[in-house]
Length: 330
Ligand SMILES: [Zn+2]
Image (cartoon, rainbow, N blue to C red):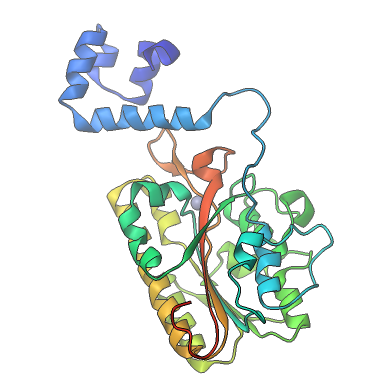
């Protein structure tokens, strides 16, 4: 890090005397050994730079399917073969392999903002309940720029940003076809419950769907539970944003932000249990589908996302399907 940034660069990012006044490797190492906060900061910065990879050169070939494949995957699981734009990404065969014969009739999608794959690597305990409930992990790549409206537009239209038209942080109603158009054309009733004025609340407007704009995450959870209970909808999408709010305020790996991830996974398991109960006897699917990850901005120590780096682009979705009658195990 010294070779790359020099003492002045280190001192600008981590304002400690050992970098700024008569710096030496020996005194800096001694200081870092007994100063956990400074050591953590330097380590996080180093890991961040590692994750960025070389600055120049072409982007690595995407090794994993994109989140854009979720649209067609969800539709095919529901037995809907058409309704997206021609360029929509193909369905994910690994997910379709899990779908019970004859397909599903109901689908619950829980979309928490900004939970990247790295969170489950650093804090596997937060995902233990999801693992224990038998959800299958599907590793996916987000889309670039890894910003919420760009990503969810891809996830639910099947198109890359150039195709759906949202290429930055902006929230116009999408003009392309989405799964919500395809679902209503196929006779499915959809409900979208989201925090008011969030991306999901705004960019899918104008479809034959029921929209519920809620004050914040707990109200979204209550709404989704009430919708499950009422039983009028076949597809329910619920969006939570607290982790994203806190990672920008504090940093993606800070305790207060991580606590929000725990609330998201708990809310998801509550919704999943309610769906299992309410849709007993009906073949259905349940999906945990975050949009992108996040990383620490070394300049501020706070969380950001939007780059084409693993921390922002690598996400894991969790899918589970149940057959109808008499199959609790699936
Ligand atoms: Zn964000």
